Image 1 (cartoon, rainbow over the protein chains, first blue to last red):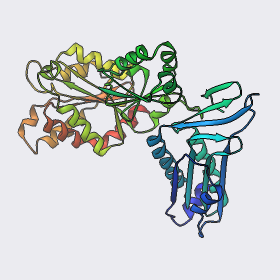
Image 2 (image 1 turned 90 degrees about the horizontal axis):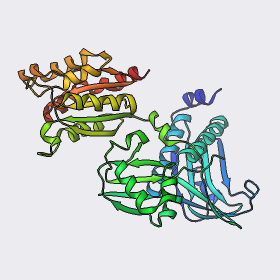
Image 3 (image 1 turned 135 degrees about the vertical axis):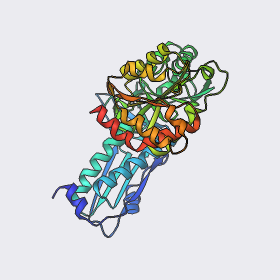
Image 4 (image 1 turned 180 degrees about the vertical axis):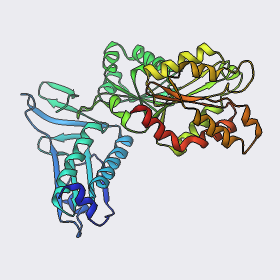
Length: 153
Length: 246
C-alpha cells in the first residue's frame, strides 16, 4: 500500500502539530513523548546534528540565526501541510537557534502515523522543506575563523 | 519610510539588524542600503532574496515595486533553494494598475487600487507584487501593461479607471492594443452584475483577455464600481489564470 492510499484509507486523524525554534538544547525523548499517541503505530525521528569535519575543515560548533517570527510560522505551516498530505497523527519540527556544539541536534523532525511507511516518507519531505525554505542561517565556527554557509549540502 | 531587516551575513556586514530608509521603489531603497553599507554589502545583496511585506520579489520587479513598510534582505539559506524561483507555485501573482490623471498627479489619493487589492486578498490566495498609478494616457498604459506581462510575467493584471465614455477614457483601447486574445465574457459578466445596481453599468467598456501568460482585466474607476465588478468575476479568476498559464 502506498503512503497516499494508506492516508486515504485510514480514518481521518486530527494531527497534533509541534513546531518552533529553541535557544536551548533539544531533548529528543521529551520531544517524541510530546507527539506519541496510542492510535499511531509508526514514529520516525530525524535528528540533524552538527558534524565535523566539513569539507576537510575542523568544525568547533555551528551558530544558527533565524528570522524568528517568520521561521516559527513557517515550521508550523510545513508540519501542518505535511501532516495533512500524509494523513499523520502528529508532526513535529523543532530547530535550534544560537550556538550548537558538535554532535548535538540542530533540528529534530518527528512524523507519527498509523503505519510506518507514511511516517518515513513524511519525515523525509518535512526535513527537506525545513532546510530548503526555512529562513534559518548557519555559521560555521572553525579554528581558523567563522564562515556563513550558503551552499546546498 | 521603509524598515529594512537584515539577517545573517547581511546583518554582520551592515552591523545592524534593522535600518529605516526613505524610498518609493524597492530599487531606490536597495541602492540607498548599498551606499550606506558599502561594496561588500552590495556584492552580497546581489545573491539575496528580497521580501517586501510578505511578498518575495524578482529582480525585474525592483524598479517598479513599492518599497512597502517592511523590506527583508535574506541571504541564501544553508538548505539551498532559490526562493525567488520557488514562490510562483504559491498563489497568484497580481499587479494592480490605477489609471487616473488626478491620482497620478497627486491631486488626490488613489483609493480604488487599495480597495481592489483588499477585495482580491479577502477572497483569493493571491499576492499583489506590483502596483502603479499612471495618467489616462494610452502610451503610458500600454508601456506598463507590456512590462508587467512580458518581463515580470505576473499571472493577473487588474486595471481600474478610464473605462467610461469621457474623452480621456482610453484604458480599454490600450488594453486591446496589448491583448493577444480577448475574453469578452468577463466584461459581459461584470456588466450584467453591475446592471442590477444601476443602468449606468451599460456605459462601462471593460475588456479582458490574455497576453502571454498573463490575464488582464479592466475594472471601473470608482471604488464601488471596481470592487463590485471584481466580485462579479473573482470566483472564475483562478481557473482563468491557470488556463492562461497552461
